[in-house]
Amino acid sequence: MRVVFLGAPGVGKGTQAERIALQYRLAKISTGDLLREAVRNQTTLGLEAKSFMDQGQLVPDSVVIGLVREKLDDSSCANGFVLDGFPRTVPQAEELGKALAEKSTALDLVVNFQVSREDVVRRLSGRRSCPKCQATFHVDFAKPKVDEVCDRCGDSLVQRNDDRRDAIETRLKVYDEQTAPLVRYYDERRLLSSVDASGSVDVVFQHLAKVLAPFLVR
Ligand code: AP5
Image (cartoon, rainbow, N blue to C red; front, top):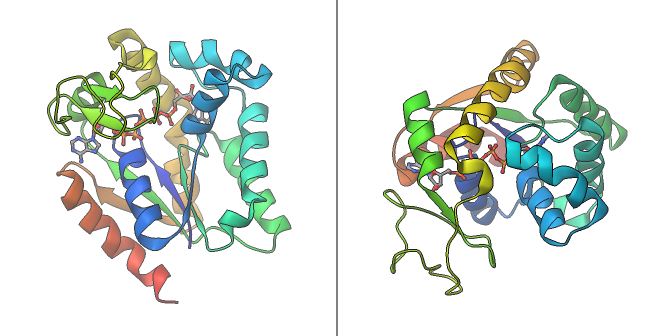
């Protein structure tokens, strides 16, 4: 199965991509995670990406497309993949289509996660992340066992720079201007399915499993 998770920042794409990838043994390709790894490692690409990310702006298409092409070539994608946070612009979607066509394959499905703006802001502003193992928590919805401490590795949790109020506003604006047009793009190609992502993590997972089921039994 080759699926894209599409939706505004904070709708829960990353949380669900992790679970779906594990459950169905798919590769998870998250451009946000790949870029944050490059920033941590202070690679040239990471240094170029950091200021865009901190401000909530998109990293240039050419940078992100290169990262994804490299991942798609990896043998871990042979059983299929979940793309989380890519594509985010029409040129990225076109490049993804080309890259898959070169491998004589194509997307099966694009899932559009739908959550109210109010809920998205609440999810983003309460998110806490582990800088060491990258686990994600939420101050209300996914609390760590000990306040501000990672359950997995014991490191102190932090708030992402782009989860500050001003950066959240920019990210939502950027989503509306540059990413939302992909809903129509994929609908016109008859690839789009929408999922109500406003419930709990478990409830959203059940909705998703239903939408993905026809593509798993083939
Ligand atoms: P990225 O990391 O992809 O950020 P995003 O798309 O803004 O997504 P988020 O990670 O913020 O949200 P999510 O939908 O994954 O939600 P999550 O599951 O974490 O990208 C970061 C930056 O990198 C971009 O701004 C850009 O600069 C750059 N970038 C990345 N890809 C790019 C691209 N293709 N092109 C150009 N630039 C790119 O959940 C959020 C919170 O909510 C968590 O705390 C979680 O615990 C909680 N939560 C999740 N589900 C639920 C639920 N059902 N109920 C209650 N709480 C929930």
